[in-house]
Image (cartoon, rainbow, N blue to C red):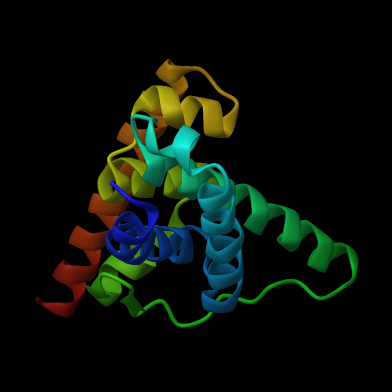
Length: 158
């Protein structure tokens, strides 16, 4: 597959995942731009990977974290924007709230697995942890998110 074809199908999913993980539309856009630029520069290598989307997600998250730390040091932390709509379409407000209540690691693992089909090994590399930790984090994130969504729907009568 050529880069342009892959980019047109991959960008919406990756942007949506990065936006949910980072919590800021502009920061996610910047991070994705850097990551896709890197993918373009090394397309032959990236295209041969099991999950080029996973690679771009990883690069974008690393870039986003680096920029967040820079902003924090300058006293200008990035502020989350409205996450009601991701690149993949409208999200139930209860889902957005549930994601917001997860730790950064839980959110990254859940989004990586659910939206980008990343393997536990890829997520372990991204996070610098063991695969068993990824599985435990994934299961805890699913339970915590599901509990919050159920509680939210019960309290609103939905």
